[in-house]
Length: 116
Image (cartoon, one colour):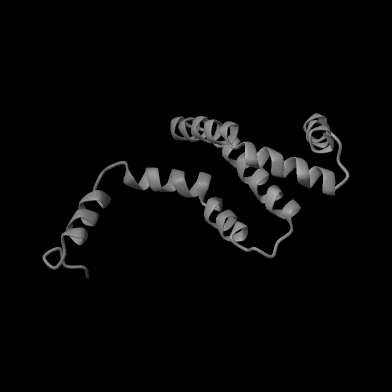
């Protein structure tokens, strides 16, 4: 058994796990967001194609958008702020679309910009 006398972190950990809502909070996190670790690990692989990387990102965004509750709403809002500021991701998605032969408004805009 872990002895609280040997480390303050053990004592603090035991204190946290005794909180009444900690089990439900951890269950919520696991049931709604446990996929994120796997998604991040897949994205760290530099040998996967660009289209697969974008698919992993899009799937993660979709799963986050499907989650419910006040914590999920906070996460969705933060995610949207970050994604809206990330013009590089939008450009990479356009490049992926061009490479896959997919034409949409953003892809056409990027094509016109590159031709100039």
